[in-house]
Image 1 (cartoon, helix red, strand yellow):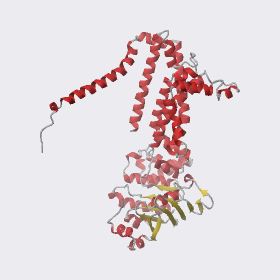
Image 2 (cartoon, chains in turn orange, purple):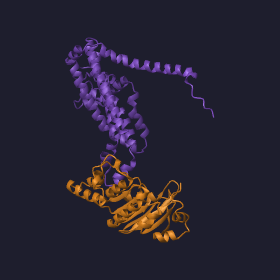
Image 3 (cartoon, chains in turn purple, cyan):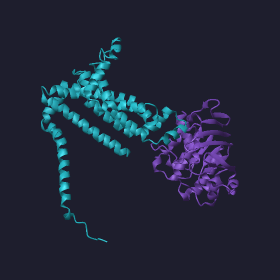
Image 4 (cartoon, chains in turn blue, orange):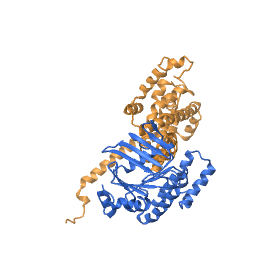
Length: 243
Length: 271
């Protein structure tokens, strides 16, 4: 179980959120650009520090201003998939997936076996030795996901995981992603701009506006409530991005 | 719509301008090339190879390569953390640190020499303290290395900082979420991604160290085999045997060409 109670002053507004996500549950965050969705992910992974609040994962406090505790990013064991995937361009597919295991000083034989397993599960075995610069959007997404999951994280954070994938491949990728998330059986927060992502991947959806959660429920419940301007336009598909 | 074709003949001043630009470029290239070519024209191959076997030349060559390698290693070792921190961390006084690291570029070498002497000479601020332990720095091979580190360090640090700044911080964030400590991020992600810039910076720093003259002669002296590097050997031998001076100069020209070609190759490969 992940619980986040965090406040942070951003440039234009104060982000103040309270969220909880259970094991095997996927929480989808939607909202305008700049509403603070990615900031929530960065607070959870420790890349940003809240001004105050508490973040705990599976009973372990990761951040607490009251306890003066802030577990470093590298010790949180969280899988964070960035929007651009941030694959290391100087490394091969194999070495990208092995990166987290090498940081944990896992024996070489075990690294080889675990990475091979992840690559096979993601249908990437043939590309193990290929430099990541030569991959398609979908392949890059799968490598990033394999890299995040190879370390057996306690929480999965996905920032627009299908945004860089070719539109024609998104349906298949979405199905694969759903199966991968289910198999991982850990809390998952997914940020998206796409209606289908919210419907097909989310167990619960939160709508964020200027750093606050303004609507929460199952994807169907949230989409059915047309009272929110963003949701009205989100569900009719007449606007996916607002500049 | 006017369909009159562009008429070059109607603009004779453009031809004159082109000729003028050509003359300026050719004049400059000749100004750079003639002195370098003169070195090769003023000596026979036999005299060149004979000179290269003389002790004064061999000693200078050996000492220069040794000290320039040592000073480059020190610059890389000390300069890499500094340039990384200045590229990534905002702290009070960063502009002052930047200015201090750049200072040796604009400082006349003679000023660097006397400053090092005042610091590390036997009666210098640090030298007097070291003298108490029986350690003498000035007029030793160590002094040559210190002088080279002093004048050559900005060439590496500036290039290294620019290379680290060019690395997208997102890669470092991703590495940290995967469990890499700050040191592991530096060693496994930042340095490999900035590698070509770091290598070209180190090569430039090596070249500057190899050519160092003013600070070395003031702080380290001019003792054959101990502190007489190639530039100092040119200065010394040209007063007696010009062939030896020209031979050392030719070796330095060849090394300089190799440096330029290597830096260009390295930076082109990373582009």
